[in-house]
Image (cartoon, helix red, strand yellow):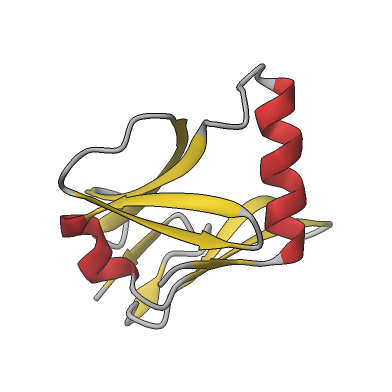
Length: 108
């Protein structure tokens, strides 16, 4: 399962509207190779669900994850911070053994 905080839900809803997406566009979370720690998060809107995807829903937000990425993301919480120390989505991933300073890449 992947969950979202209230702040992340609010920001996802705002971005969906700003970008002109209809409510059937969900959040797709992927893990790709790269970044200073070896793996990177990729977050985007998507309205296509493939046979190899799993879909989770939390607080009314549907999250699409391909099965390969799911191995790295189980138990992750998606948060949003708009504080002085940074702005953007943050992944609270219990599977990550280390993360980079910017929080965009991780290692397991």
